[in-house]
Length: 157
Image (cartoon, rainbow, N blue to C red; front, side, top):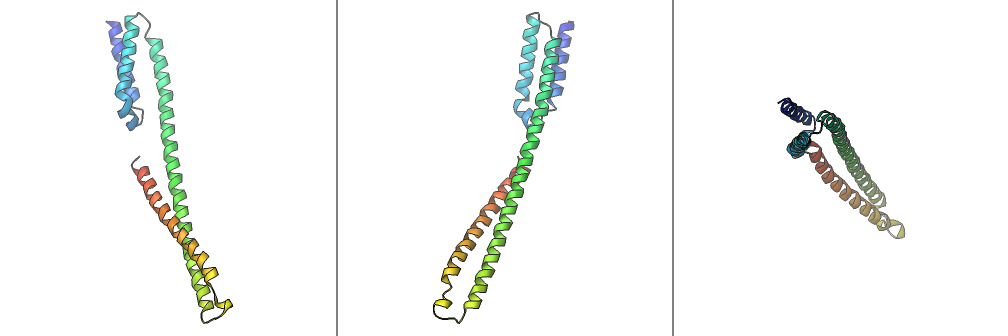
């Protein structure tokens, strides 16, 4: 009878220990872990092996795994935050480059107006500037879309 009580207590304490895992991990693996623990304890008991050493070892191993799982979750979250920050920086930098290029193109066009001949041809300056402006605009849009996706993953991992 005493062995049965220790088995029940061990299972109950192990179930409590599993509650320390992050919720998503626990929902995915908790039931299977409890069943594996119960089966292992039952096997040890039927084979006449001691339960205390096994339970202490499994508890210690599980505590280390719980800490590791929380650290991994924190690292993933920090990496997502870093990605959002990086994409926000890229987005605003691309917008700033676009605005500066548009201002530069307008300035060149204003200064070149009314000029004729070879000195008045601003196409060699304006065409690459327009290309850079377009590329900057595309980069800003792509960065904004990716930033939104990364932010959604931070909120709903």
